[in-house]
Structures are given as C-alpha cells and as structure tokens.
Length: 118
Image (cartoon, rainbow, N blue to C red):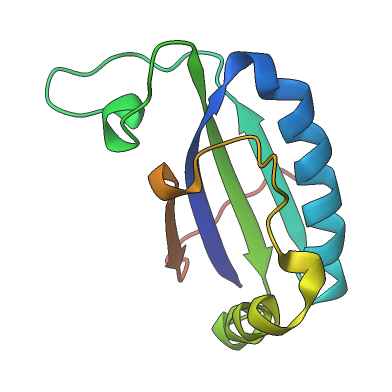
C-alpha cells in the first residue's frame, strides 16, 4: 500500500464544482490503478497557534480546506500515473480548476501502521 495525500484550499462557493472535478479525476486515477480516493470537505478545522491546515496552504477568507488521500498498490504505480499525467491529455487541468493548485500541498507516504474495523 502507498498513500498520496493532499491539503487543498477551495473557495466555499466552488464546493460543488470541486466535487464534480474530483469525481471525474478519481475515475481517471482508478483507470491507472488507484485503489481508493477520499476527498474530505472541512468540518472542524481549528486555527492553531503556530501552524494549522489553513496556514499551511495560505488559505484566504472564504476558502475551506479539503483533506484528500489516494490509496495505491505501491510507489511504482504513482510513478506510472505521474508519467501518464504528462502524456494523457485527460489529466490537463481545466481552465476553471476550482482551486489554486500553487497552494496545494502533496506528499506520498509508505504506511507504517494501519488498523481497520472488522
């Protein structure tokens, strides 16, 4: 298992546009082997004294935080999709992308522990 994680500031009024974009992007990622995509809209994101999600992405007034992750079989799968992003025009961002991708935070992780309910 390999995890790609994201923190994204999205204008509150673009929530439905983001949801639709995310749904289409998720379907495309699944074509390339992604096992699961979770997009989570801010519900309880407190302001921190030193740092927090908003500070991390320089969120502006009226923006909400999306916390997102993708589950991949392995790191090589992510490398393949990153290469495909440069070659498959379906990955080209739309002109009306519902967030500022310069402020998106992304990172990939190898799990060291995972617990699931039965």
